[in-house]
Image (tube, rainbow, N blue to C red):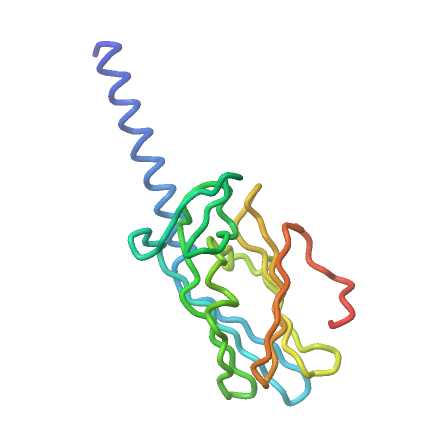
Length: 173
């Protein structure tokens, strides 16, 4: 076998391995992820639904600071690359009753890492008036941290940072 033939075979094998690794990583991010918490007789269930990112269904561009902008908002978790997966819905159930979560609270969250339970926490606040969901998304330089405060009234809030650590000492826990 010639060196040129060996080089072509090696490159083809490398390409196939890269594609398989990428497909495997994507399949870990594409599914429903369900998390629950209990406090006394109260229960909360949060379901994140993800899907492959389809660029043709979004307005995508790179701004002058090299940030990916998707549908007019900075894409969290992208590190100047097109997202692999997107959050298609977040469903919240408090004591079995669904509480609506508007898209604006999650539509800019890409490449979730929810298959690792260390990347998410769900709990009732100390007063039990809010559900606190803390999540880390993406990985490496693209890692981001989101904290949502979901309320039965639907008056939800969130905080986003590039902080890589959970707020273990949060007064709301």
